[in-house]
Image (cartoon, rainbow, N blue to C red):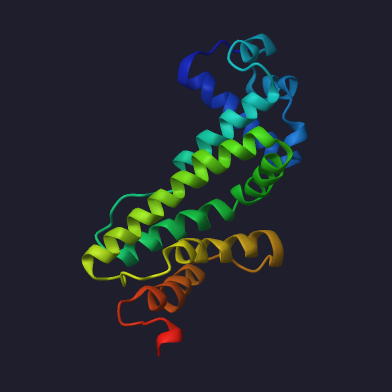
Amino acid sequence: MTRRRGAELDSAIRTAVLELLAAHGPDAVTMEAVAAGAHTSKPVLYRRWPDRRALLRDTLMGVATTSLPSEDTGSFRGDIVAVLHAWKRLFTGDSGPLMRSVLMAVAADPELEQTFRTEVIGMRKQEMDAIFDRGIERGEVRADAPVGLLRELGQSVLWHRLLITGDPIDDDLVTRLVDEVMLPLAHPSNAPYYER
């Protein structure tokens, strides 16, 4: 068994958690399996987490809070494209099965669900609101834009393709969602349909 400490050990543990979760779902994330996957011991894990759910919860929260950008790109379009491209990267390749397993884990753990809604979804809503606020200040987004709907619109299409239809999630989809759906609805010249 390799003796490691600090960031190296932490990375090995979290990698083992995510690999088990992606391959076999949340029930596979046991202290014994994680210890074996990380080449460490169960006592090492129990010194940091009281049980498997706490370990899984902590790992998923770390992924959720660091995976998506929120930096100002200089334009509303650039900001939205950056966010949707980040979602696309999460939903494709090796991380696709992981994202489906994350939803299973959240659904199976009420504490994780509450934490996820409060700390992750709540934070993402604030970050998307900031993107729309910047767009309004620049004159790129109309002041009465339905922000609550628009901030979820692009992401909802990606989630639907990941979980329901299995249709491609690619760069072309991101571009079309932004240029053909979100920008026309958010643009200052686009008055609400009921006012036309």
